[in-house]
Length: 219
Length: 247
Image (cartoon, rainbow over all chains, first blue to last red; front, side, top):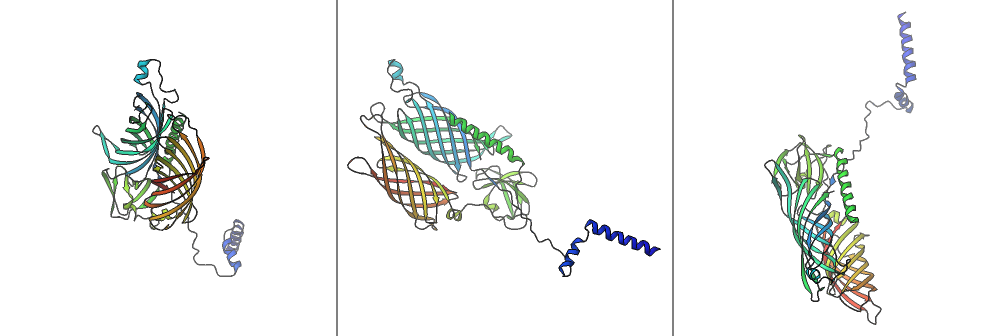
């Protein structure tokens, strides 16, 4: 009696096992002829691609300020800048700006006389400069808050389009970069744009001081 | 104003990118130096506010120049100089290959952009160029220049072949040969002049010096022959020096 139950149970197990595929592995292996391996190591290594490290050496932004164009008054200037930080100290900056200049005192007093057309009165520039962060460190606002900041000196060459001509321009200045966030900075800059101009008959060197504030984003 | 709008929207893109990046996974490494110092900012002037010791797992959040922003186990975030991370280990125990830029990257460069400034026959010249390296010695260069003089302004576009003599040296001389076009526009204050466009050929020699990271210094001399429509060709000498970046 007992052996009949046992036989039935074994047959059932065999059928269920065969149908569900249990032990198929072994069956396949026995088909190959060799004895089944004692240990079946999983040799396929997982290929883990490590996440990339985000590099933020570029800076892009806009600025707005005032530029004093020699003989042509103090005017609002707007522009854009793009910088690449080479080391923690040095950076290279490409900047461009534009301003509409006003009448000279002579033009105002004489009434009718116009030295320049409206097109020529537009003051535009671009420059390539090398900057160096001379005083990096923390700046404290109140007792509890510290901001990362840096004071930098910057200078370079470029072109100024004014009074109908392109003029080679040297720029020199200092600036301050305040960083409330790692990727966001507020700039305050003072620049002197120096170029030679012969508009009033005699060639002279003109200094055009600019002060602006700007915002930039690192990426 | 159009470019102002462009830059502003670019800025917004960057901000959006930053926000999207908040959820990302960071690279994990194990400290192998006895300890690393976390500064409050990416530079020598920022104070150390935290120290993490050997064996600790840290996450590399981002990089700026030679500084890495790391997050340590307790959530503190600070900036570490790459020299302290040079011996860190990967999670599997292997050495972490720090993506430091060096001379070997310079030797393997493919693209390069640069800016040069100098003298072009008495005028001030500003040049921008892009270059593609074909073999360690040979590269092709596309250059746009602007020469601003007392009596005229010129715009020039040239194509050059550059032969670097010792590509495996940090400082190496090179020779260059090229051709292009030049457009000369006399100053508005001069009378009775005309604009003119001429073709030109140039031959030159210079020296390149690898400085650091992606930075290269170069200085060169070029002799130009401008094929004018007048009886005589014009010969112009050009001296320039500047910086370039490779990638």
